[in-house]
Length: 231
Image (cartoon, rainbow, N blue to C red; front, side, top):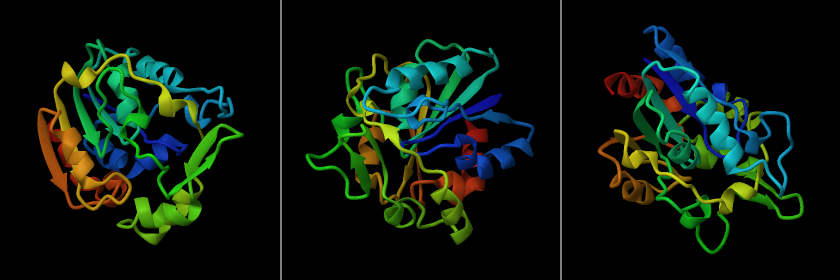
């Protein structure tokens, strides 16, 4: 088995976000990989109003998924659920989806389908530059409140400006409708409310709830490792 991690919005250096859980999986001889998402500027092209957008993110993840026929658990976090809904469609190697505090779109839905009329207070949006990110002063208290100060400090250098294009682009497939899926509800998440997560979880085949914030793979890596290994 291998594990492919797909990170959420407005971050870079994807492997860092998963490193605590990935390290514990490696101790059990389970390899993992975290594809770079072009919309977050991880592949060298700066994010802008013109993209890269969802299609490029989908292609990047799909490329990793189709590069091996080894049975794969695909772990998607937050915005990563939008990407994997399309990227995993029809990929035979993907045996299970683990959705962590993840958006879970139907065909035709986009990230903006789940937002309110006003942007979230923790976002910094640059309409002219065509990008958005998390406000530095809101990062720890909103998304990492249950992590230690060192993780919070390091995370400040791992945020990214992401293309606004990803907000409106709809998914063309919903892999979770055809692949076994487990939803991990993070009950103390201040970024994606637990009530919204539970709505998404109702679409998954099984549900697990953890008393954790938005990034349980950093705050409670052993629990996430054990869940991955149980799938």
